[in-house]
Image (cartoon, rainbow, N blue to C red; front, side, top):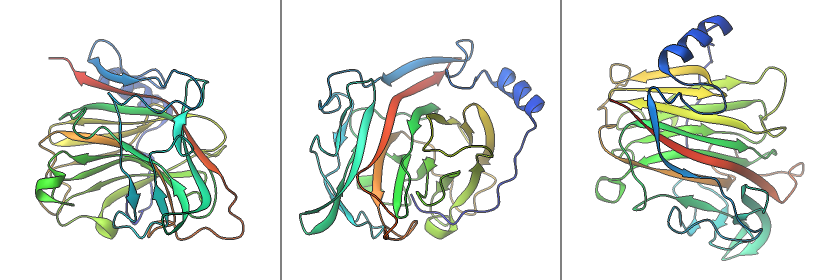
Length: 275
């Protein structure tokens, strides 16, 4: 969840994007085509309002800081992470004194529950907005406990500064290219903001290359030839959804930031490429 962004260059025109999508078998908001991919995992977050996410799919990371100078305490309470009753998962950051911190929020992962090497990982998300709000949909190598970060590898499918509501970042971290030296690119919305509606954030990971998409539009590829250190994306990864408050990437909230701030997740889906 850390990166210094570089200038985004839109890689494809609309026509070229359409041809690429047809060739790769992915479409805009409905996921990749059945010809190339098969669904292997999903959560549609159906259930009554206030229910915790399915424990067969998600576990809570409870604590604070996580090495990024974040200001929230991430809890396992429904006040911070629960279904909204309308088919979404709500991860909500609140301004409240809790466990020595001034804010609470939530961070959930599929660690030890679902981990996969290669595939298409995607989520349909509506982001919050405000100075110092840091939502993300990202992945860590399943060997994190054994080798630590960044040797385990990190794939940021989407991370976002709440004070830049028209911009998201796709980033890759590994040994020799982590934190401020991560390989990263910005994606810009030209006529809206990411808090105004839901958008589909995805990566397609095939062996020694990873492609990033937003609403079916390709905007970045990173391959093993592009990284200045070891390519560590050769083992299973697990997924993470969270909303941080403050931290090195976004800075602290200020007087313009209102609370609560909620990230809504409509669904998360994972596909494997067919032979």
